[in-house]
Length: 247
Ligand code: SF4
Ligand code: FES
Image (cartoon, rainbow, N blue to C red):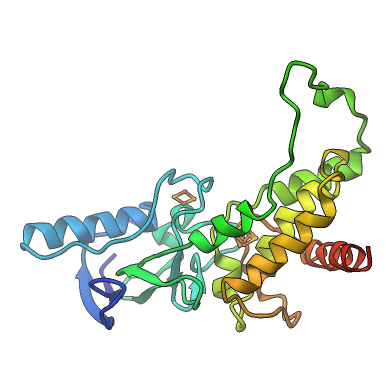
């Protein structure tokens, strides 16, 4: 496949960026999107030019690093996949592909296609944990009975990989899907009950402090989420928040 790539280039957080045009040739439809970018970067290095900076780590849909806006969609065409799981067969020979960083005030661009998602880490630090006594008398977690449907829902919420596609898909750059997944994975389990009130209050407060927008129920986040995190989690977080506010 021969392709034209329009890629966002930005030297650093303080400079203005712009789209630049590149050509890649003889790309196998079986190569992954990131492999195609590797080929482009080899080409740029051989020409003595600066390679395109982009985030990646596991390249198997687990770490959530590979956040790219491809043709206007977080993680590009296809549902339930991350950018590293996207293959070039989703495109046609001769296509022009637009590649940009995730756009959100709370995700500032560091360089080219790399954004700073540490706002998500700070939301996690605000309450995305449980306190467990590890002084030798810890209760075996498997000794606490949990209803199967609740365990399944908690597990589904826990599959969020913190990629930020929900924020990039939302016209308000809201982080409600991410935060609600992190609240839900504990709200559904007895282990999460002790700190439930502070957790939801602190995580929502941090989410607002980071500059994410509000949720207006458009559902774009759920559609673009590579892990199928459901809007049901947002409803659960709202209930948890209401409960906590009247305590
Ligand atoms: S909710 Fe989905 S889209 Fe948002 S950070 Fe988690 S995995 Fe990514
Ligand atoms: S590189 Fe880890 S999810 Fe894509």
